[in-house]
Length: 434
Image (cartoon, rainbow, N blue to C red; front, side, top):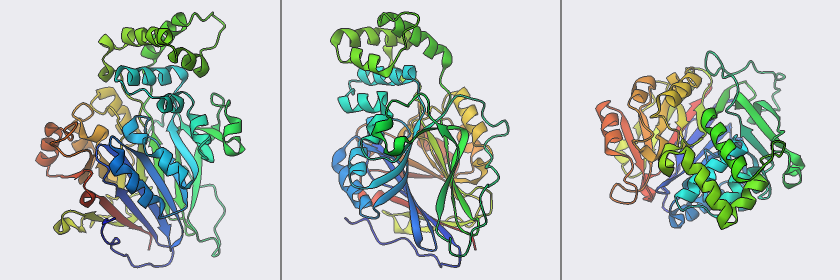
């Protein structure tokens, strides 16, 4: 496949955790993966999004990835746009997946997303099923657990802080890395698909919930998702219009099945499209904020990690120890988060305020689009590397935007443009523990 040699090997000591992160070269899209490995015993694998505009480049890379392991322990889906999920069928068909984490969306928010896809002429049957019945869609593809990450409820007043671990002292025999989840409860809203998921495991992760990978000596690595709150006023207006369009009585429930039934007819789709256009100014999809899951991958506290080793594959001279300061080993994926919007950015920064000082790498929102970016992020995050997962500049969407590039260069930070060229694969290795 020509992906280059293995990453630089770190000396393995007792109870050392090694984390390897990859941004795969799939062009306009996103496919990021991580391996959390303690002493070489049963490494844990996670993925953040798996999609691209051009499946010709994505499919062989997904196939290459699935040859590395038979089991995916955690799959994080930022949102269900095609360039973030079109590779999931291939991924899920060729490996066992323990848990998928999705942004929680009520039926109104999911309908808004579907109508936006319709307005952009990218509505397909697969997208419709995945958006309106996500628990069934993933459950029917063999995912063991479906967890919806909540965006409503009181966020931590002082930002995210990991909870005091509630676990027995590990023995010498229990040295393998394991995942421990905090803040999940059984789902009530997504209970219709019990028969479609193994054991009927459909959960909701409360605001501030997270996943911890921990070794026997209590060394930990966090995976912390965040979903921005929905504009409740806009959702309320849209709900009222949809109920009227569907001729629902006061006591009738607005369900996904009712929405799907209307979307499958020209008359019903036109009625819902009119509801959408009335709420989103002029029907312009860009005015509807995506609900997109961000993900922090990094240590819980400063000073826990060594590294990282950055490897930029098309420029051997760039490969160097850039993480001499161990505090900056965290990574933040942003999906299509609307971080240009002041309120959205403030809430996002407030949530991650205690983890932000450790972020060394930021995956730019929406492939580096100026519509999702604000230069204030350069002041609020110590990140050294900013990744744009996008096509080449002279093709397609022309991401990252020139203004974003200039902002990053002016701040003397490093922009990494991961395209469909195999040589642009970007990898990081971090060592945690002694």
